[in-house]
Amino acid sequence: MSIADISAPNAAAEVHRRRSLRFLNFAHFLDHFVILIFPTVVLGLEAVYRRSYGDLLALSTAAFTAFGLFALPCGWLADHWSRRNMMAIYFLGTGLSCIAVGLTQGFHTLAIALFAVGLFAAIYHPVGIPMVIDAAVNRGRTMAWNGVWGNVGVSVAAGLTAWITATFGWRSAFFIPGAVFLVTGMAYIALVPKDGAHHAPKVTAQDVTLDRKLLFAVIGLFMTLAMSSGLVFNALTITLPKIVDARIGHDLPLALVGALSTLVFLAGGAAQLSIGRAVERIQPHYLVAGVAMLQLIGVVWMTYATGWILLVSLAVAIAAIYAQVTVNDIVLARYTPPKWRGRIYALRFFIIFTSAGPAVWGIGKLYDRGGFNLVLLTTAIVAGIYALNSLAITFLVGGVEGRRARAAAVPAE
Image 1 (cartoon, rainbow, N blue to C red):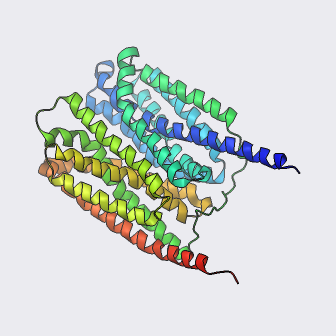
Image 2 (spheres, helix red, strand yellow):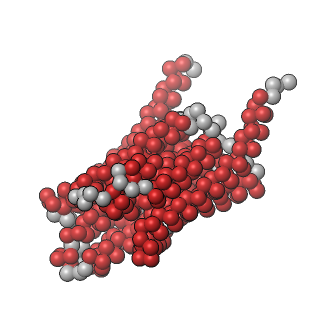
Image 3 (tube, one colour):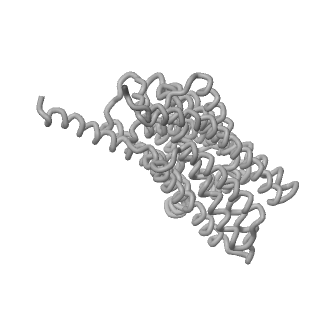
């Protein structure tokens, strides 16, 4: 067999790997974009459905609930069937659901169609993130770029949806993304090869095998971490514009408040790229602890900051929050068996996304009792719990990494 015969299949595999990653990154953008369409569209639907803003916004609860709830069965199904086919269902199912929302005429059918959007959108995180991990050559950079694509989807959703609605009508705000989903899905089916019956990914040099007790301890700590990180993430991303408006002062116009909030969120995107490169130089379990402490410092700082210095404290907090998403994904992938990843990530994202409901409810109750001082103080306490969990994870896996390094240093006889 010639060198050309060997290199040709390897070259083809590399092309498929890169192509798959491009689809997965774009899918992450679409996933965060689509789930945030309705909260913007709803502003113009009160006259259409003759319902109050509160009644209409409540419809998005169905989508957000499905987005978190169905992460569990989607991860299980992908582990037992085919991740590639699940992604095809994600593209086509979400696209058809978006078009169904645009075609609805009644209040109840709108609720059902929005629920369907959340159901199919729930596929991406427990299925797409393990696929990104399996396809990555350099996990740090690959996971960081994937996270940035998702954050861009969050950042542009409101503005782009508002422009489409104002220019073409609210139904087009669902028709256009629906068409993008369908076209992308058909391209995905045509260009990404089938993976056949599901098979466990190969263990790589970036994976570390733990004994059963330690494995379950690490997974348990990560699930606790998911709850605290989800509460902090949702509390700050939901309230950030209001914090800017209330704490900076100067009676800022709404457009400037939005622009300043966007700049703060962009700091999070920069942090994700930085953490991807930091993983190449620093062991990831140390980064887990470092990012957790930085998040705690940022949240405590913003609790007491006012005026323009508040923006700096917010940037530190948001940068740490976005960085911990990436580094936690990397560490969880490193210490969990490849064949379990779909289910473990499904459970993690289920906890993170379903924490949005308690976060919103808690923000309202705390604000009514003590204003933003009480909201931010409570957030700082949760960030402290997150930091303690992170230190526990660092301590547990640090011993494993130490033994692994000592074993590698022993010369062969």
